[in-house]
Amino acid sequence: MRKINIFDTTLRDGEQSAGVNLNFSEKVEIALQLERLGVDIIEAGFPAASKGDFASVQEIAKKIRTSSVTGLARAVQSDIDAAWEALKDGAEPRLHTFIATSPIHREYKLKLSKEQVVERAVQTVAYAASRFPLVQWSAEDASRTELDYLAEIVEAVIGAGARIINIPDTVGYTTPKEYAEIFTYLREHVPSINKVQLSTHCHDDIGMATANSLAAIEAGATQVEGTINGIGERAGNAALEEVAVALHIRSDHYQANTRLTLNEIKRTSDMISKLTGMIIPPNKAIIGRNAYAHESGIHQDGYLKEKSTYEIISPELVGVSTDVLVLGKHSGRHAFKNRLDELKLYVTDEEMNRLFVQFKALADKKKEMTDEDLVALVLEEKISK
Ligand code: KIV
Ligand code: ZN
Image 1 (cartoon, protein in one colour):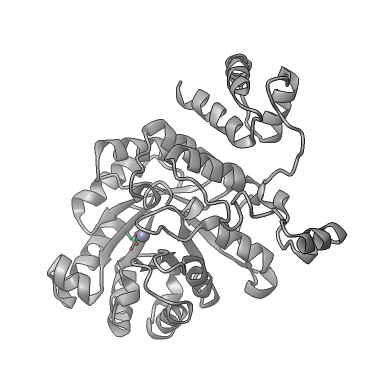
Image 2 (cartoon, helix red, strand yellow; image 1 turned 60 degrees about the vertical axis):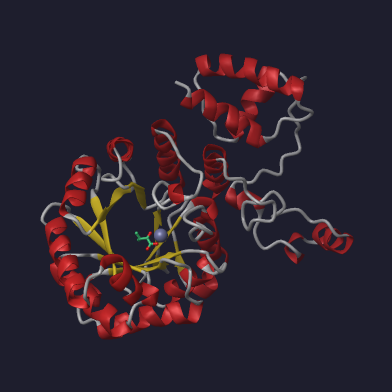
């Protein structure tokens, strides 16, 4: 089995979703949950973008011990300096720097020639590598870049010290076959390719982000980038819960796995949805409310006879509870605490005292208290401190 590294960019690309603006403590809470989920790399933000981003990246780098924390930097020395200041106390500081490589971006956005883009990329990667133990370089809009030029610039940045090469489908334009061919081409035409890890980064503009990410993995990528619930710029990024569960359920096909604790997925997804205000569609794969609901008579009959007739993923695998115990205004403190423990929402005695009062007040207004309600209550308690 090949090990696939999970690079989570919920706090950077995900936060670029229109209308989303997470505060300092919300970002730290999310990073701690991503660490519990077991992601390998957390992209905590873009330190040069604002004082707020700098401060949250710095705090996350200090707090997180079992995931590597990274931050984004343009191909500009001052961005790299800001990222180093924010990340230097991390357990494994790594930099993520990028420059656009496609003809459209070179001509209209950067107004640079092919040679000038290579020169800028090499200079900044070499500068970054003189500070950071690990440098990732991304070719923005790689999927619309000439293949021979992409191979040339990738070889050049490897020479300058990049150790992870990311090939983004920045505008969600590519198809699985085409995207896989880019990875195959690079593996065949870049002389130093064996020194690096290849990474996939897909956007979902035509609904292909998960399929494209999996195609890249089949073609040799060993790192996959995405966000929880697939949030991100425009139509969003590859949904990491989809990619990870696909690798797990179809490990016979992919011969690859991740180190994610899959039963932390639901909790992570609920937290991100609550804090970003981005509601999960009921039919969303893996984590939607209806993802494990069987409605039609024929399906219910088959399911009751043998679950595997209509269910390929057991809800428990991803932390979705099928518990039927209902909490409401008549429930006692014990039942409330029990459910929090089952949901792994750990609270101190002091927090419990306040939470139980809030629980009763809310339950008085609602017929039934859902797990989402409990997650929301606990998050509010933790974040308000
Ligand atoms: O989509 C993209 O190209 C990006 C890069 C900054 C990696 O998010
Ligand atoms: Zn992106």
